Length: 226
Image (cartoon, rainbow, N blue to C red):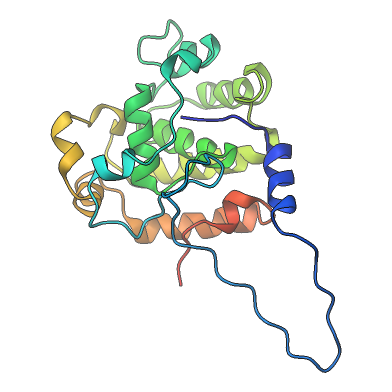
């Protein structure tokens, strides 16, 4: 789990990476924008890393080996308080950092704030037993109590809500408790099927996420249908 920049930083990075905007010249055909890549796991830049969903033939271990992860010691105490299974105030879906990273891979998500919001929402939703109060409290903590750069801006919590809905809709109950060491060397496609992660339905949720948050770097690379 890495959240090393807030939304404004991610937005700025996306704008800076785009270069100057070309002006339309009358009478000249305009080239359409190249589609985003299906994945990028050959980068050490955590902002750019994302595994996508078109990797069912790869093993979980192979993709995890490319993830530029933060060490557990770098995670603030308040994050561990709510999200770690040993935390004193652990919430539904609290999971170890190693297993949290596995969920990122299985859902095809990168490491930006928006990706993190969806993964957290999906993991909590898969418990199938979260009260409205607990859900509200966690979202409030994410957007107000967590320190920068782990804080998730309120607008980006739309991704959390969609992740929560997806986790309630499909995905194995108590997904965060489903992992064991034998899964590491199994193909992702096989694991997704076993864990109830329907990639076709997941892509439809990602299409809704892109519509809700159309101007973000995370949305532009989401694996949507078509």
